[in-house]
Amino acid sequence: MFIGEYSHSIDPKKRLALPMKFRSELKNRVVITRGLDKCLFIYPMKIWEELAGKLGTLPVGEASTRSFIRLMLAGAIDADMDKQGRILIPDFLKSYAGLSRNIVIAGVYNRLEVWDEKKWTVYKKNAEKNTDEIAEQLGKLGVY
Image (tube, rainbow, N blue to C red; front, side, top):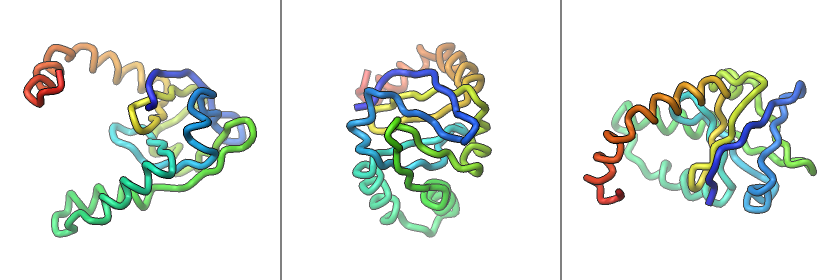
């Protein structure tokens, strides 16, 4: 399980070092794709294969379903980690998420999210303002 948030930076060669504590679970190979809310999602290969399988079974009759499948699958790349635990972030994904040099890696259960540091700060402040409302919704789902 991935949890926590970590400040990192993208080096001039567009490489991102993943947090040390997650590297063994990621097993040197990950999938990076466009995420929601203009961040990137990083999945371990096993989790990605399960997710891609589910996406492949969705009905493509609705435009919103097709769009989501395309967002996730067409925007995905597999990346090998080097010996220092770094992965290369391609320009199209870096641009999609608006990543600058300083980023935040957030552990979100089965994936990592990569955020531009400034965007993460704004997102987190907005989410923190709505914690009561979020808790109510989760309560309705039996989660909280």
